[in-house]
Length: 195
Image (cartoon, rainbow, N blue to C red; front, side, top):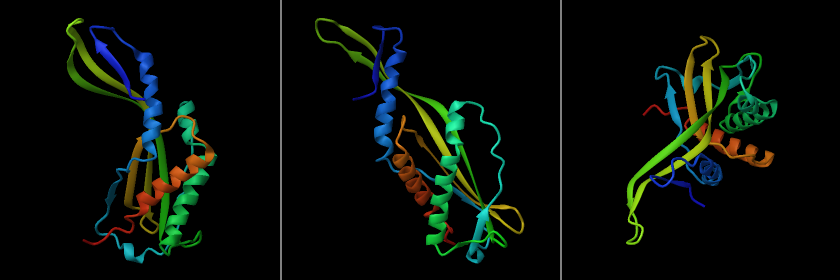
């Protein structure tokens, strides 16, 4: 099933058709490669980081229902388990007394509309001019940011961020599996190489 087709000149607007896009985007999320953005302090001594702990964060109040869904305790537990699993696999240990670095994460959601203008289409011999063709895709984009902070200086030394279209009403197993995949991809480049 493709995105909703809108022809200006035939119909003024078909906003309801854009709902179909959520199903399309959901089917693409699982198979799409992630575009992870990295930034880090080139002077940081990442080789000396052997232990970590979580930076205490205030969760605050959600502004709306979507934000509350992303900020849930269940999502928090899944993200923390995924991060700890990846760091443990890299030989780093959790140390609440004397960590070398601290980990923080941030989540967010944003409503997006993607419009592709295909120009004017040509009708058949009987109907003539076909009008302008637009593909309208409406979806919710989720963002996850991981920050690593030097425990001694409290300076941020590394950040990874990724955004992707969110599925509509995924199962808890699907959410956990996707968080694990996303976090693994985000931490794949940590510690950064000196090249």
